[in-house]
Image: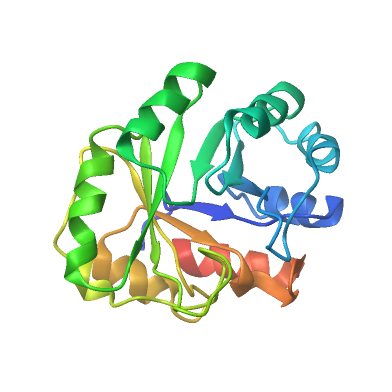
Length: 214
């Protein structure tokens, strides 16, 4: 695999996990602002974590159907580089967020069957990046971070006009396969580098990034 694969470590909550991700040469660090997630951060805590992230590592704010009040507070207090919209936001909402905040928007689309693919195409026309994730199980109480993968064959031959990222159930054991099958140049992991929900493991982070770039 090429060494230019870009890796996003998402759901960071502790300074030592941020440091481990930076030391392992992650390209993106994700901070989660969805209250139902075990990786949820309060805005002041995220601001404290983000302040020491070195130049060149993108800080991503994961939100789920956030209103302007939350996004105002978030962007006003945390030095965010990308807003990740992980809910049921429409293309129109993506455009409105881009216009209001002037930062790139990454839109997450959950995939389970081929019927989900047109939504990826629609968002590719408005978002700055796509994140292709597994659609959550019917009984899930959050839209991502459920440690499940989707059928990668669904997107094996598809390309979009904007950068995109593969997510959903990735680990150091399967990330190389996912990259090879889909042609992804970017990958996202949260639970796949954790020893407990929300608690990252430095060796798992390093192993994942090494496997993705092998």
